[in-house]
Structures are given as C-alpha cells and as structure tokens.
Length: 80
Image (cartoon, rainbow, N blue to C red; front, side):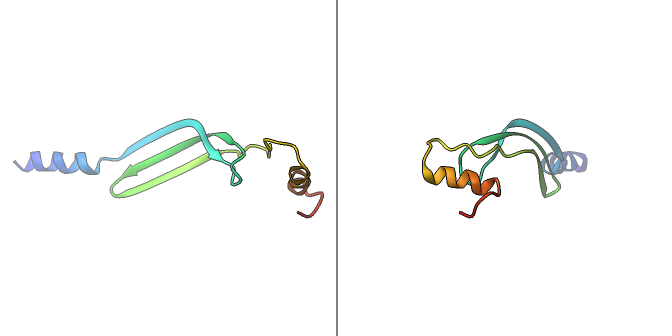
C-alpha cells in the first residue's frame, strides 16, 4: 500500500525534459518569426524554459517612407 502511494506521488511530480525546434521567436513588432530551440524542464513544482535562437531581421510588408525611416533607424543611421 505504501509502495502504491509512493508510485502515485512520483508520477505526479516526475521530472520531464523536452526539446522543441520550431519558429518560436517572434519580433516585437510582429514582422516575422525566427527559428529557435526551446529546452524545457518541468518537475517537482518547477518549470524552466530556455530559448536559443535569433529574431529575424526587420522586413516590412510594404515599402513606404515610414518603413524606410524604420529601416534606417534599426540600422542606427537615423532617428525615428
């Protein structure tokens, strides 16, 4: 009986490790997603996620004076 209870408790708190590779990193201005790897650990009431990747370059959907100004600003050439 005690062994059954211990097995049930372990199944509830059992640690797990998961690795995902997908488009997980999104730009703050929503102009694209970048490839990334996510390493996740969950167990004993603790959750930890580590994202490894890069955000994509700024790529506006339409060309205008405002997007040209933003491209110069991202490159450090002009003030927005």
